[in-house]
Image (cartoon, rainbow, N blue to C red; front, side, top):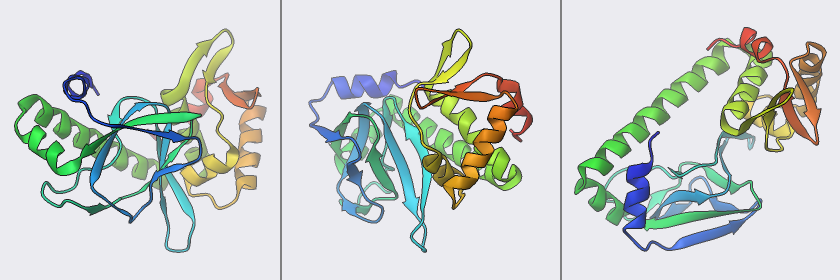
Length: 218
């Protein structure tokens, strides 16, 4: 998404900035909050908790983006739709009164278009994620998640594509709806045996992107 409109809006205002340390939470699912948050710097992870207490990861965010859904325009307090946890050493987030944010959006055609694009992109992402989870199977889901990590954190290096962020097999399991990290361990080993990935300083290096794509229904 082109976020220059959002950046211009933030530059024109003096919104307070919340600074959070690694592994702390900005919000919890169901907790009432009166603010909208926009990521300024750092990496965060969104997740939800299933009725049986299992965590299901939604996505990592590492660029300027609205990270809490806006919901309706008039309610001062809303229930947070998901958990937001800090994954980098620290993260900075703009904190905006959500009712005032909606007023500002309604007075700006540029912001209105940005918010429409925001919801459209999030909807398309959710639909694609659901399709991949339902159609790919566990091994395909792991391949899909590694590909998504590459899309978010990928850096070209001499002998492959480095996912420049440490992601544990347990976290990958939580993204894929797999209950056991040991299952992911076996699939990661399978990908190593196929020559698709290797591990370098605890980070994943993709050595053959085509192997991943062959196991993904995009």
